[in-house]
Image (tube, rainbow, N blue to C red; front, side, top):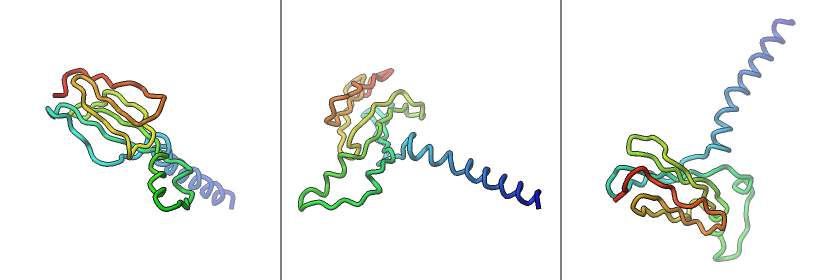
Length: 128
């Protein structure tokens, strides 16, 4: 009987450990949002990532014309990679679906309308 209890406890701990890592990735590392967008010369690409939030689980009632306001509350990151897949940098973004991203020579500029901008992400080479 004691061995059976220990086996059940070990299985429960293993299950929690196995489920904890994907939950961490979903809540804190982010989930890819949209596809990869390559620079004009193809040397770099950026990817938008959204973070989990309690707001996404709460149903919202809105007046006509306000349904898209929910997109402003999807926070996340814009990460820049080389074409080989090495991460160069990241910038936080409020309203990931609405954030505008521009290639600007040797930088990537994320414009999301927030006051706490991280500034441009500097690239190791030119993007054009």
